[in-house]
Length: 178
Image (tube, rainbow, N blue to C red; front, side, top):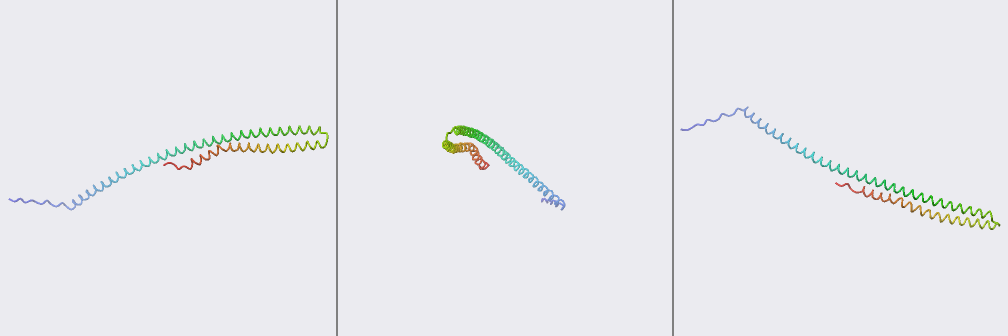
């Protein structure tokens, strides 16, 4: 006997459409879910990389700030040292000028007394000439000496500042470490 197989009835066209729509919906939902997962993963990676870069930059800025603070502190200390040297030099110059003025005054008093006791006009002229020549020679010698002291003091007072300028330029010329 032969068995006859009955063919299954063909699904209704609406059923085919509903099945296709359901499959399409599942595929779209799968794509959307995969896209959302990928977007979330990308966002997390981006956020993590950004956080890392911000932390590195913050650390660099703190380091730079600390270095600048130390640089400025050393610059102020050099300025104070320079001012102290200049003040000491001014004191030394004042003492020297005062001593010179006192010596000049004493010499002029001595010469004045000698002029008052002079017995002749020639003696007055000779005393006056000696006084003028000695005063001029003393003035030239003292001016040279004071100039030397002034130069020495200025050089000593500017040395700490010159050194700090070199360090500051060197420090600020360095590129920022990455």
